[in-house]
Length: 609
Image 1 (cartoon, rainbow, N blue to C red):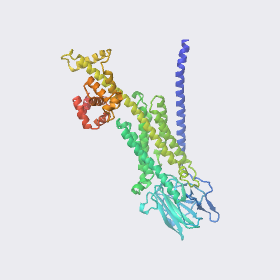
Image 2: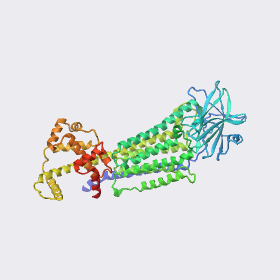
Image 3: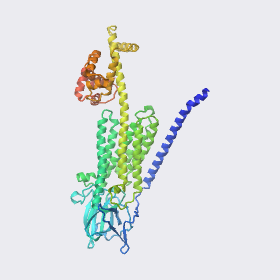
Image 4: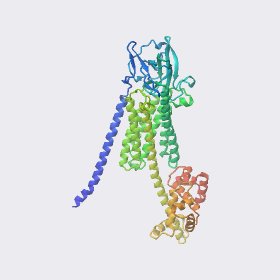
């Protein structure tokens, strides 16, 4: 019978252990599967020529050329640019000799490989205007930002430059002042013209040209700029919030989060080409690339470090397993340096680790959830959002959505889901990380307040005991007084507390719970205790001989001294801020009056001890 009872008691524990092992195994398999898919995508992500196959182009059998024509829609229309192409790996072919080159013709081609700088891609296409009035059309790219896009028109057996845009083109020479690169041209009623486009300098290994009305291209560029600006504004706002909300804790708990947001800001700012729009910069992608890689590496390393802190802060130091974080950090530093130098032209090794590291951290966060780490839940959610976003970006990079005929800006944005998936996943990831930091801070604050409350209560008991036994201890030295007071305090715990002690304890706890609020005064304390200010003043005067303001100030000073003794902060300014004092000098003056030493002397005494 006893054995049966023991087996029944053991069964739930066995089921819990079995369930834990099963969930961990599933999480491990999911993480490995996602990681394998990411690696496969990275290995096989070489640019290829994508065929649109949408029948949106006209093949002129007589001349073997492709003619682009737009329908007459009120809101404008856009479709893939049908063109033949020529690759100039060295960037030495100019407009005078390009007509003699042999262009490769592939009907309805959507994506074109582009050589690395200083190489260039030449596109040749014909446009036909079936309308009875002059039309203004534009050529743009789904990849949004280019160094130099120059549009030529064939006139009398020579090429005439008619438009130019790009981040290396001065604003005075550019025909477009928007974030998205585009060039436009006019075509006469029922006219047909031949054009050449020279494209150079982009982060992407391939480009997807489109042709459409200037109005639709303008709306598209405005929407893209709004999404990019939203990302920049989010990074700024969250950085400011983190510095304000988390300033009362040790810098290590928010400095990596702030570094992550700052790095993300600069990645977006540089990658999307904002320096050209705001400052008129003509720096090329090759010149910006080391800085983009540095910012990307900073984002990755900050992500690893604040995950390490959040996931190991509640763990016994003897049981902390941080090898995975150390390995990821070391690889991140090496990958960042390698990507900035790029000696072999491998592209971006930071991007590879940037995609792999969240999957590894996701598995670690899953393990921490079962270890009882509360902040591991939002950490897991944030990493999951980031992993899904990065995986989606990688998928759509390898398998881009076919560009089809459209007159909707929203449809056009959805044809380039990489921007939306990356931006949304980053925002969701940062929000969940702030929630994780908040959970950790609240837990630490509760533990700190409990420790300080116990310290103040113990000190009060010692003071009362010393007063009660002072006549019986004439001539005793300070050490003997303290020892006898502690012994007497232990004996007095068996006696009922003195009158008003419970009220003082509640008042002390109320002040400590609101110690960081500078406006917490007598009225707020009376409201928290459920009494009037007059009653509060009378009871405090009777119990301790202090006014409510003096009582609150005394608790704040005692709280500050305990923070120093408990080594919760490293500077006097942080101690003053956490204790509710707005002026550091005023705090130091009151501290000296109360404890006969300055906060600096208290710090030094603690270091000597």
